[in-house]
Length: 264
Ligand SMILES: Nc1ncnc2c1ncn2[C@@H]1O[C@H](COP(=O)(O)OP(=O)(O)OP(=O)(O)O)[C@@H](O)[C@H]1O
Image 1 (spheres, rainbow, N blue to C red):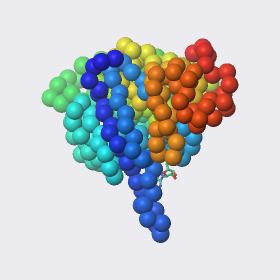
Image 2 (image 1 turned 45 degrees about the horizontal axis):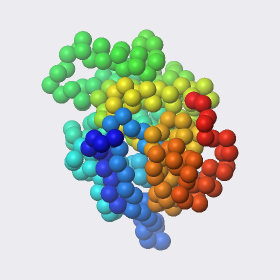
Image 3 (image 1 turned 120 degrees about the horizontal axis):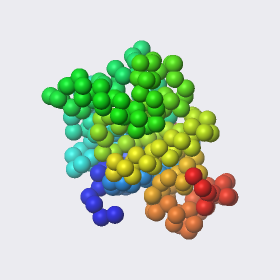
């Protein structure tokens, strides 16, 4: 893959101020690039800094050092409502779909709002409605569901709506933080494959954060292994899985002995 990266992270650091204890470094010098059509999986045990990095990637967390560029421009943290237009194609999907969905609005309205934000000046009601129907079909949902409120959907349907909400912004990159870990087994499989299909068909880039190695092994092109805020290694998924260069990766892998070669 030789295209320019969609997102380029250099020496990223994220720190938190802990009352009475000073500064805690959750992300310590991470480098990462994501190209069109590529899923980069980030694995590591709980508390290693995956979510802190994910939130920095989309500009929710401020970096305390290093840089993140999206389509060649810096990602600068700003409240969602003041998010600059150039960051609209950089979307995030959270573990809990309610983090992206407003429980008091019908699905159609929520999707239409994002479409409006992404299509300033082109607010045709017919085009908006068509886009809402198309995106629901793309995530495998019956467009009739657009009249429902989020609470009237199953967990798997809700997560697919959250993915649709990211998609209707015409994203170039989606950062997905544990997008399937809260789902039941059949929804996990469906949503995992859906993410792979979307990346292939739309040639977007994806950062897939997961503590589930099997998911990353199945759908990620490249894998980064994170420990205590650092990437201990990153490379093509198959290489990381079959010939890990760091003992910590081996340790993670040994917890799931039948991983390599698993069918999706
Ligand atoms: N807002 C915050 N203030 C202080 N410390 C925080 C904050 N958010 C995260 N941390 C700490 O930073 C470290 C990394 O947390 P983070 O949520 O990024 O890890 P993670 O790998 O995503 O974990 P998990 O898989 O459990 O979600 C943890 O030690 C956590 O306690």
